[in-house]
Image (cartoon, rainbow, N blue to C red):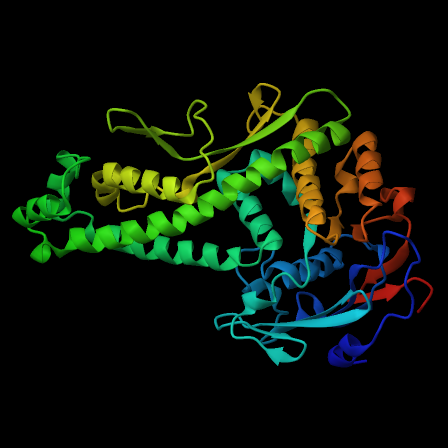
Length: 440
């Protein structure tokens, strides 16, 4: 059966249960994706388990499902590794069944060129327009980086969840990243100029000075036509507006996640030590118009008010201008912020034990799942080889929580790693093939 004909086919059975069958991935067809020349899977609501030795391609299947939902991989930053060696492109097709209606999502991955997407066989102008048709929450061994890794990992967690919850934030995120690239390029082009060094020693434009005064000062030190300050002012405004919209959404999301993450941590860990989360900007300013690192100490979490946040960004950008020019980097904005995790009274990063780190990472994923569930249908729950990483208690508690989802896709090296409560349809993964147990 070809990938396209497989995508047209309907599932032959649905698990009859009150919480199953609303939204689920009923068909997955891959062409030249990772290790697979071609694979077609018919999936049912409930639990599907993929069993196979390490290196056989279990995670590739989960990665493909996640890519259909997010247009990105949880394993690599670029698309090139996703295309099978020797192939020019990879094609992913998924049928999402909702209340008896099918939606076909198709993604064509073209390394070095623009990817293309179709929804129900109709091309869409931008691939991100298919976001929201399929929603997933992924648990993977890499999740430890949510606790132990750099702030970038936690910012991505928030941004990915924002897009899953409200796909329009894919555009907000893209707009901010575009502004950041342009402004950073401008700062790099200004770095090292004679007037820039003078501006650095003068600490840049002080609060209350006019743009004209600073432009004149630049011109006196050799800025070309005095235009550089005006150009930077324009990009400052773009960054303040785009950044404030992203900031407000992140802060609101953090507040919604806070009680859910605390409850999930208590359930998964089985102890009374609490998990708290908070959003911290990378800077704070005092009454003297001075900047300090917001990642040191415990500054209050800002209100999710876009106008106030934009005003704060404008002020911080003005105060940091000289240093930014001197260093050629953008030091202010949500790209440098932090989702602060604390277990008890201590920061999670650097202080949490291995078990506490796993509990915190699982809690963040479970909180994301619950938040998306509150907004409507359950997302598809992807559990990629996580049970082998957990002790018995955490394994059983996670399995119990996961068993209530509408659809769960589990991977494991051996069937014994999967708790009995997640018994369901079983697939064997070996030699580039995925075969349903029983030969169907």
